[in-house]
Amino acid sequence: MNAPARYPSLPPLSDAQVHALLRRANEVARRAMSLGRHPFGAILVGPDGHTVLAEQGNVDTVNHAESVLARTAALNFSPEVLWQCTLVTTAEPCAMCAATQYWANIGRVVYGMTEHRLLELTGDASENPTMNLPCRTVFASGQKPIDVIGPVPALEAEIMALHQGFWHP
Image (cartoon, rainbow, N blue to C red; front, side, top):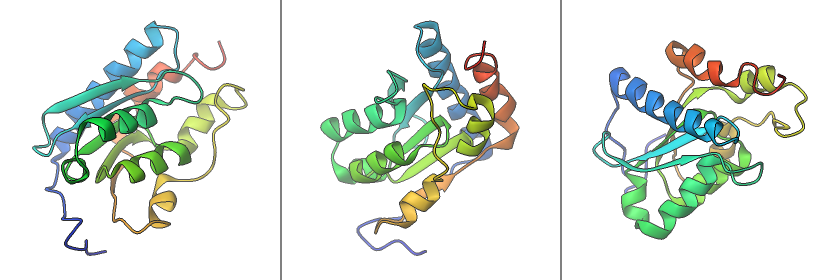
């Protein structure tokens, strides 16, 4: 879909950039896990595709890394700046996080593993009742052309490693 003038296209990210950014988000997830939280991490990357403007680990079952980061970003940056930014997250944003990103006006998301893959890892864990609602479906329901990059199979094993054994010790 061609972006309307008020939603200019974002410059492309190279595979090397995507991999480096996902590894940084995974380190944020590792830090969240070390604090006793769920192993999810998100970072907000500036318009240059390199500068990390914010990092956020998972807080709890309602305050996911992506939604907390998007709300904080919306308080600190204009919608025009945020449209040029990228939210990078270890796992595909759930419906709540995708909608929060949409309303915060963050123009792109990069994620490592799918929500479906996460469900395979969490199973029936009561702390993460994963929904089968891809972020692309959430974004397609809106009027803004959010750019989505993911999943990234080359990094899936690294991201999954934090989740293996976490949900069902």
